[in-house]
Length: 97
Length: 426
Ligand SMILES: Cc1cc2nc3c(=O)[nH]c(=O)nc-3n(C[C@H](O)[C@H](O)[C@H](O)COP(=O)(O)OP(=O)(O)OC[C@H]3O[C@@H](n4cnc5c(N)ncnc54)[C@H](O)[C@@H]3O)c2cc1C
Ligand code: SF4
Ligand code: SF4
Image 1 (cartoon, rainbow over the protein chains, first blue to last red):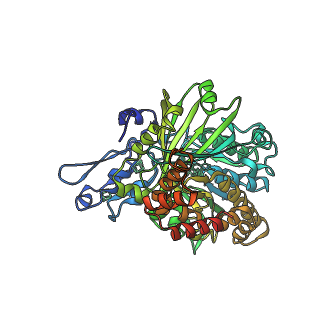
Image 2: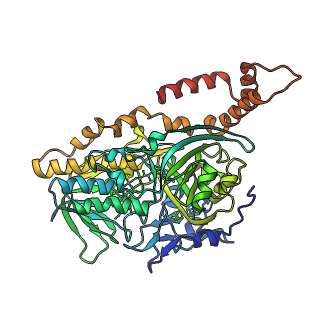
Image 3: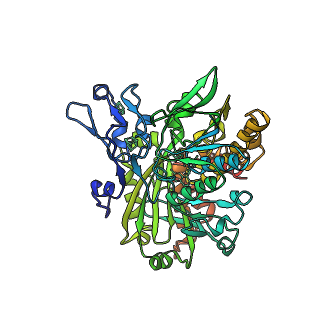
């Protein structure tokens, strides 16, 4: 479907400023994800941070996160995600939001 | 101990802090980002008339990109586009109607008004929870060392995910059915090119809302003009998105590649990509707006007026925030009940518009409006505008029946939706 917009996802995320904190503000329990049938986060996370692994789990990196909340809202497995905001001053900084 | 703690320096929080500080209260305005607006993303257009009373002449100093003098609503199919386009020179002069602006600029400007009124803005600080004693909210915990702060009233203006309202059980922990995700690209283009492509000049700007560009996922799209950039994006139901298997950025790519949109964005480069949730539950899903020692305002209370593609959130956040600040002052100074806040909102545009448009989200995001009507309407108009000589012209009713049938629309459903649309938007 995508016709001319072939921007690589990394380049897309490269346009956004992140002040990455040391504490991962979102933690994924991959053991719970292994029994998840929807993998809703994989499709819906606008930053594409949920990578399915070959054993059916999820590899997650918190660093380039918009802090939007979509993942915990669509996740239907209790306890798979522990979700907090990054510490004050850290995380995404929008200039043209 | 302070009088009021306002959590979140978005438009709702800044407005609440402004009225509370002007009433003479001691106000602390907490913001988790390094500056107000740094965490916020929207379309967008700010409809600023709500500021007429509190900040007279606001339009002379608001950090405007362009004044919207042209508004269009577009219906797209893969190969067709139908546009209703309106322009007014009155919208290009004081008191104006709406302006495009970036949240980093706008939110900082508005928060500064609260600071000028005497509020203390504390940035880079997360309110991590509420302090509750005997069922009364008495303050917040923060992520600062020794970070507990006590106050007579806490105002939650912490936006769509409001963890503070969730802690009190006012909002459900998750509510995917009433949330949409907005994703946006800001695309840089020279000013003159934007003027030419959109038929505007000077500081005139354009606002385009689009239906039928989300591959059947409930939602819509938008294109807004800034000074030397465009804001292009889509807003979609998060449930629908998760089930579709389609990635959000693909939807933007589709929109940009559509024959009606591609000429606008040609050659433009992505300057920033952003995403944010929107509460679209409307009047029928409003939470309790107050609890002892506690008020909820703006997106935290689901007060964004949203019908899929037409979004008015900032003005509703400001309207409700101003009222929350006022109610807090009445409570602290004259012991008035915090429930006066809701009564005040019932009498203002905030809840009156919400009540009037309570059916709008359901209608605009319904399967028929999303999946069938765009194609049906586009085919109908294509039929009317296509000259088929030597075959005689079919009547409009025939065309309507034909296009309705082709898109699987029953005429009685069409009539019912037309009626409920008429009632909803009357
Ligand atoms: C894609 C999209 C397009 C939109 N288009 C438009 C439009 O064109 N016009 C329009 O009027 N509206 C639009 N809206 C809606 C509008 O953006 C919102 O309704 C509005 O921003 C709500 O204001 P608010 O102050 O309630 O919340 P927010 O603007 O979300 O502000 C909340 C603030 O609280 C801070 N915060 C949150 N939690 C904490 C905490 N625990 N501690 C400290 N600080 C905290 C955040 O950092 C943020 O600054 C759009 C929204 C989206 C997502
Ligand atoms: S985070 Fe939630 S939605 Fe995603 S894979 Fe794990 S359980 Fe499933
Ligand atoms: S908060 Fe948003 S951007 Fe961050 S991981 Fe979740 S869905 Fe992705």
